[in-house]
Length: 381
Image (cartoon, rainbow, N blue to C red; front, side, top):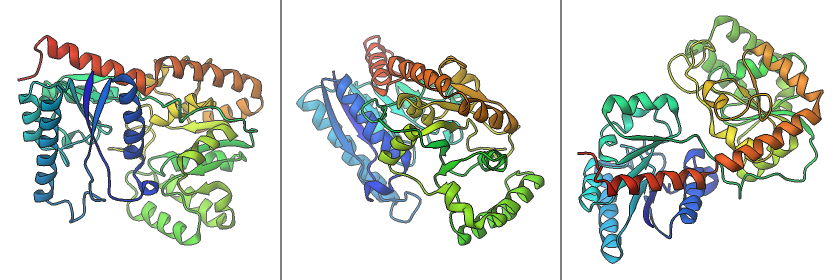
């Protein structure tokens, strides 16, 4: 199978890449090269950020023309079996997909954030033979448009995410941005006396960052309850000297893997970006990429309960879940007191992730589905 792959490539140092773009480039490309006989790679070479003035309509048109010509040249040299993209309407033009489809090449597009940002892809979805999604909550969006979709859960790259020979020196950790109700839950655990290591964007580590955080909380609360704003403010002001013991900035891929292995408990949340995101009762929910990375690394996962992940892992045998702030505290205490039980669950979770949820396995399924659809003459009108 010969695949033409168009992936994002921002003109900034790799260390500053947005997380989504980094793992898409690294993990998808590795999976494609394993699943296909030949992979032709087109890199968009995009300015960063896209929302700035450098990404003009003229530049977008030129980049799309470059892509169209590259696909035509590759197809003329040796027929391409599948076109694979990981993009949205900010980058890809509808005419580009039409030109590729005119060559009778099946088109697959992956869109990471197709729940809350589906509008970015609305003009493209009916020009793709397969719209690949990792979000069950996004499926109704495709169905409303009459567009074909193909669901797999998130995956992991076992060459990157693997067990390390590290002593468990961190009680509990969380890696992710400070969004939604995460701060409310994590500070509740810290106030309960639990050791916590929190890394990611938006966690204040200096007094100036605390001032900025409190300004965001009070000037743009986004539905955060008054009680939560007050308790969060009081904690930050009362623990200025402790911030660096709890919070840290984003970590590199290597540091991330090490933290998964150092932590006796790795935490995750299901709440995402969208209406009501700061309200635990109303926030949109889905499993996260981090859930797969943790389990594939052999880490013990304690994540917020949601139907999607409960259908993918055996809760209580492969992973553990929590439902409320108090349940989070109780589960952390329970598994810290039972390290052998947590280790057995982590080993079982890793075996499940390796068996069912590698990116290689998912990519293989998607490519095979695209080829079968093409042979049946199933391209959308």
